Each structure stands twice: as C-alpha cells, then as structure tokens.
Image (cartoon, rainbow, N blue to C red; front, side, top):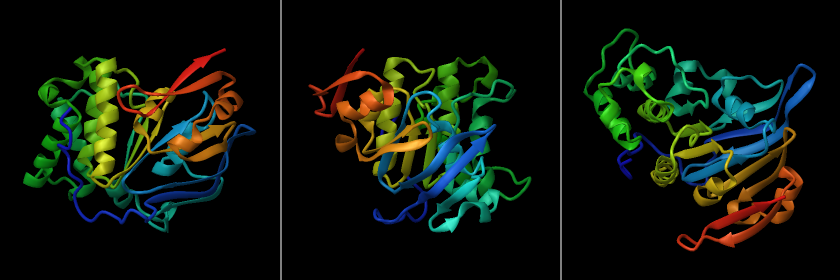
Length: 273
C-alpha cells in the first residue's frame, strides 16, 4: 500500500471536534441486550480500536455508528446532528463502513466495484467524471489494489477482496472510516500494511474506528481503545492507559504481561492461560 497516497478531500474538522458519537445507545434483540448504554466518541486524527471477546457487541456498535442499524435507546450524532435525521446519501458522504463479511456475488471488474464508492457524490445515473476517476485511482493505490483493477471481482481471493472493499470505502472520501475486522483474510505483511494505512488516514484528518480481534494489532496501531464486555463499556481511553493485565483478565479471562515492542516501543501483549 502506498503511504499517504490518499488525501482527505474537503474541510476537516478540528482535532477537538467530535465527528461521530453515541450517547447511551442500546440495542435489544431476542431478549438479549447486544449493546447496553454505550457512550463513545470518534474524533479526527485518531484511530480507535474497538475490542472485546466474541459477542461483546463490537460489530453491533459499528453498525449503529454507520447508521445501518437503529438504536432501541440513545442517540448517534454525526457532527452534533442526530444520525437518524440525516438522509442516506448525505450520511454516505461522511461515513464509510468496511464490513467483515465480503460479498461474493458481485460480477463486476474491480475498478467498477471501487467506483461504487463515488455514488453519494454523483447525480443519479450520472457517469463518473474526472474527479470521480481520480478518487478511484487514489483509493486503489492506497488500498494496495491497483494491480487488481482490471480483474473480475469473483476471481479474487478473500484477502484481495478485503483490499477492494477498503478501496471502495476510501473512494467515498469519508471523514469517518469504520472497519469490522479489517485484517481478516489478510496475510501477515498485508495486515501490517493495513494497520499502517489506518494510521496514515488518521494523520490526514480522518476519524478511524476498527473492531479488532487481535489485541496486539490494536496496541500497535490505535491511539485510543474502547473495550466492550457483554455489551457494556469495560474501559475507554488512550491505548497505553486502557491496556492493563487486570482489564484483560476481567474481559478475556486470560493472564497478560505487557512489554514494550523492541522496534516501535508500542505496547506488546503476551497472553497465557
């Protein structure tokens, strides 16, 4: 992936301004509280890792933030406005979501799939203009998918599809990027490239939030963490203050030793039963 290949278009909110936030949001399904009174806030220039064991509510919270799912209680705010009062097209100009499950029924070339990210910026039935084409090319380069541009999407591997879906999201030129397990399907080198890209995008002004399964990926790439346990917030704040042996024992039921990564100095977590 090309570092800093993508530059955020348009006005970028100041670093202190909330881009996307929840206020006491809850989701109840089948008699079970999937998300229970969660407050969170995403700001420009930050990478927030959403952690927690399976079933903790990570994907549900991302879908709330993206407006894909409505809350049973509480409010989601986009730059201070209730998200449910913003139309889908306007919402898509600000928020892009990369899902964990990848579509497998898209019989289109990769470039056309990535160009779908430009839909919120075009008039209905309008063809791609020069600005759209440039945005698609930037997104392909940033996601490391430019060599796939002429391939048919169904012929791609899971890791290649992951890159293409990331490129589609970047082509939206969002101010907030949400990702559900973005390193899933990727090999080790591509995982590290993706984490670098998320940091680069935040440095360019995006608010980035990613649900992550790997604690060390979160420790390596995230400036802030939100840790969920049984649908509730167990801890939130800067990565260095949130990751503690006590928290990891309480949430994951494992023993943890925190070390300093010899190359980066970032936290490195060694787990044991």
